[in-house]
Amino acid sequence: MSDPLFSKKNLKLLTTPLSDSNPITVQVLGICSALAVTAQLKPAIVMTLSVMAVLALANVIISLLRNTIPTRIRIIVQLVVVAALVILVDQVLRAYVYDVSKQLSVFVGLIITNCILMGRLEAFALGNRPWQSFLDGIGNAAGYGIILIIVAVIREILGSGSLMGYKLIPDSWYIVNGGFYSNNGLMVLSPMALIVVGIIIWVQRSCSRKLIEN
Amino acid sequence: MNRNSNTYTFLYAAIMVIVVAAVLASVAIALKPAQKKNVEIEKKQNILASVNIESTAANAEDIYKKTVVAEYVVNTKGEKVDGNAFTNNLKQQRAAGFDKMLLPVFECKTNDGIKYVLPVYGAGLWGPIWGYVSVNDDMNTIYGAIFDHEGETPGLGAEIATKEFQEQFKGKTLFDESDKMTSIVVAKVGEVAPEEHKVDAISGGTITSKGLEKMLKDDFTGYEAFLNKNKK
Image (cartoon, rainbow over all chains, first blue to last red; front, side, top):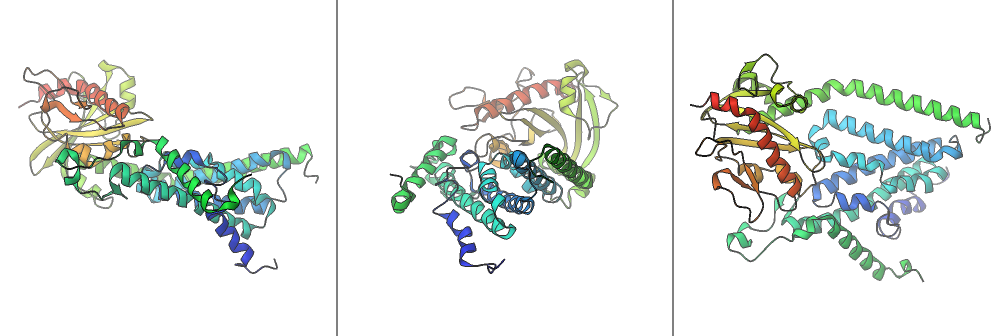
């Protein structure tokens, strides 16, 4: 290891997934959970943190094992590591932070099927050292989380008139109370998440020309 | 050893599986007591919440001891029978069939008098939903209600677990003027039902709302004899 811990090259592992190689908007991975957990901000944040924990740890473990894993069953090994970590996280949450674990409920299980995890393990951890893999895991989870949070903020404000569960739109504005405003019911449904993600991709591509294919 | 040989692959897989299984099993066993405790405390908090008493995970046990004056099990003929109300599993009871069903009742002493807490259990869209409904000693008027779910859609069906939805149940009645069990109608916009038996459904959460309506109807039918017997 000749590189210092936070060399320019290593920091890049953290920052590129936030924009130019964003797992959701550029690699288009992990879309399923991005649609499912973004109706409100709170589950989106908790999901981001859980994915971050699991992805960073799984990356490190696979990276440590990378020279021993038989190539023919490498996907199975990755899957076992991810599944075991997810169950561990779930069990610990249930024992010590019961409230949070109840909120996550099905989402924790969804982490196993998140394509970003397998994608990063296969593309990065199998060929890189543990520290770099750790940074790559944190970076990609953050890139995933940033999109989740943006989508969730848009959907919760427009769909429920609140943020983190706190009301933003005064009750008197609503039509039922004699006002002029009504929440957009379409926003709380999953198709709207897809449209919002699509708009984000569109904006990002028009800002960053190099992402546009010929 | 050659990393691509069959022996290596089989050995690797076998050892990996055993290690992972051992780790997961020991973690599960080590954390079991703490998890069980959490579930018990949550149930106590839910029962207390259904009679409008707020509690935290720390003080729930103390308040529960003071508030719940009696716990017993009744059958669908309204007779008290032997059994543990707290560990009673409504899902299993439902499977036993209507005549053999044993239903738990929690009698709570509150500042407004004695309330009867009736647990309910049913199906939502993605999984089970359940709740605790407390009635006044007229065995008709709902004093408070709390519902929860395993995995309903956040923002849609999951709204049954919010205060706004649950507040609607207060003061609604279970029996109509001719003493017939009508339960509660979870009504969509435009659905007609008498005001005293009606709450508003959740928009975008129709299947959960209707599941909740069916759950109340089914379980209150089970409690009907008990309620009639103890009417004052």
